[in-house]
Length: 99
Image (cartoon, rainbow, N blue to C red; front, top):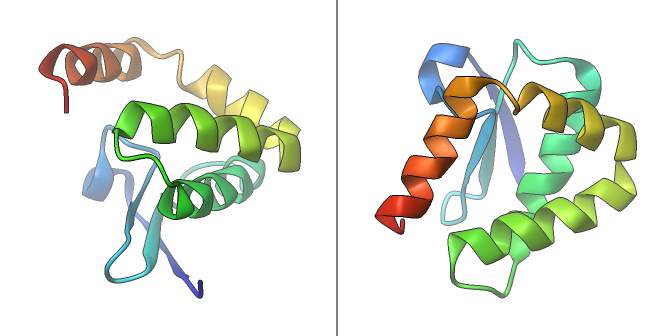
């Protein structure tokens, strides 16, 4: 799968660090993140797009694990960045809503 990566401002995808559009085959990554986070997120989003799972949470977990083994330092750094209260709140609300 050939995918294009576009680096966007924090404002464009907040509170996310990255996102993808499977139909358009494009990955969006915040350009204000460190190089190791961007590299990890690109691998992560590609794994997410290729995932056979339907539910977003299953995709999130399996893609995260696969990507960790390819970019461990980026995964750890991105995980540390994800511990910010606004990110935790975002994911709690997402789980409660069931999206």
